[in-house]
Image (cartoon, rainbow, N blue to C red; front, side, top):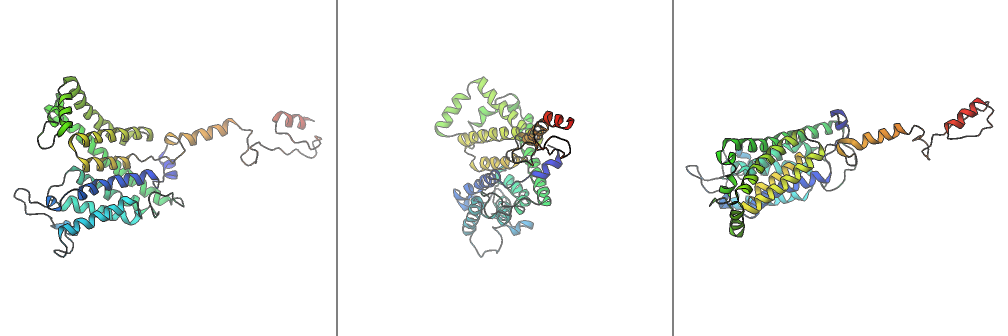
Length: 342
């Protein structure tokens, strides 16, 4: 589809967008619900104890109000706010709340990981899409079409998310070429055996046994590289159908990461972010990239005798009262032609 035709039909207010927002918020919910606040604010190295409130971080949920509230209380308030975001209530307001909470977590805790940083950026980029979503719940259908200006704003925000998410996967995939372990196809062998981040229990035993097969460890290691690069390219250049395939691959990939090394927060954040990036641009019912609309137009061209203004769908002809035909109507062009000759 051309950019103009995409902008004329684009509407992000659909269940896909709601599911993506909920999954994205769930990553931070898991972090706050199952992590002791003291573990998030523990001093690291020579740095002072968290929360960090310097500069723009002063607006963080951990910092506003100074010592009025204990860190554990703030922790609980943020968890409640994220649950409201995940519920889908009033996206226009909770989109800003979501961005604020993710900014607070990524900026003020002691040791944020890639999941917290990605969530912060994606939630911020989602604000324009949320501000143009006038529904009470992001699970319901919109009652009115988007204004053209709102379509343009939301579509631009969607592409900003796509650029960010594609950049994450391309950077991760291409960056592995700088590591000899990844180039040799042995990195996964060492990842599963890592004492701090590797697998545990029976998963470790099974993984170690599987990764002891040279061909398998090579395939898994290089498969990860190829998948990450492919996902980045498809998000930027693929069709809606290919993006659905990329999303499915990402889900399988990150569920595998959850099972093996337990990175729940990072996996949920990335699945949610990719789900937003893969949001179909074409409206429902149009097929892949608007093919349905094109086919409908083609059918109308191939059936010129059908008149959409007629209840029966058949073009009605009105004979000239002076043509001598006796006022007999016929839908068939040959009959009308003979009537005219008479």
